[in-house]
Length: 427
Image 1 (tube, rainbow, N blue to C red):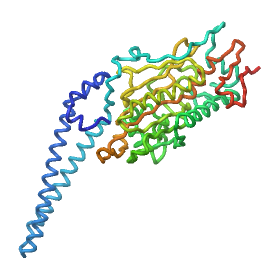
Image 2: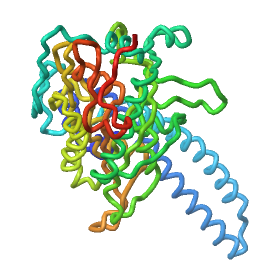
Image 3: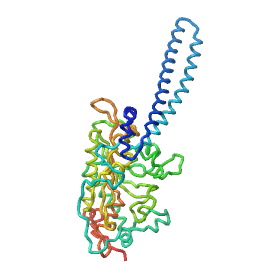
Image 4: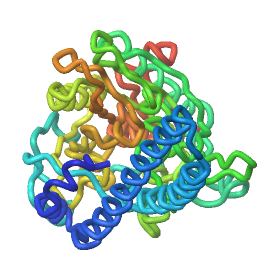
């Protein structure tokens, strides 16, 4: 969440920043809630002070042998009044917190202006899209020819936006996961973690999916009100929830392979064909927990780590800085990696790498002890896909296809598939 002190001190400045997103901050509502909070806080402080003074007076009266009944009665009255006022303060504080939890993050000054993805700025491009002597097929047709993608079987058991993988395609999918994990742990210094795929609501509040984006989540019917994770970002970032991370341990770098579950409620009609936007997919997630002064260097580093996967796979891609209107609600700045898909003749998102600054940390009470002040302060959190495994599989199938329906295995993946060099069509 946004720093409450900043909200109180400069609501107009916060409003101007959020307006870049197209978000209208209700400053009058904020000021009204804050005025009500102050009023009740002053009354709580007054009653507590009077009750303490009254308690001392009772002790002094007893010492003098005086009648303490009136003072005791007044003390009981003050206690009752205080309970009621504290409840009023708690109510307005809860309403103020709910209101603050619905606010998006402040944007970093370097984020380009713009209302939608058309204003995103390309910052880097790598490789050349392949040229084919035939019309390239899409990943669905390629997967069917290989006997490796079965959307009909998935639909019979689960409905639309699911897939069953078989044989050599399933093996290639697994190889991608292992390759990514090895790259990030052996060369980029990440610690691999395994985390729960079910979380409770407070974990999702911590990373910003709740309360605003509940429609994107799959809830689980149980007494404990679980949700299926939409991304490993949720449990991995919550590893530092309610913790004070020692300064000498930072930065923390975690990598995690997990399934991800998304309702895609806001994507009705989009990418219904194939594996681009499924309800269930795998992802290798990168998370960094860093000192605030280091977070933008860490964003560049994390983005380069995700980009390295595509470089090793030798697939053309580009990096774009998202504009103000396209940055996710919790992020202060985001770079998207977009991979070339021959069947669509365009670049498609395969990773988003974001710096959340202290937005998630405040929600999670994740802190570090600043050696310069000796006080606990919010950490900065970052995450990015390194990469989305299903979309990477799509990119491999399409970019490495041959006219006869076979698919060459990228050199970086061959050690993970027993040296196999080609996926061959099933007759």
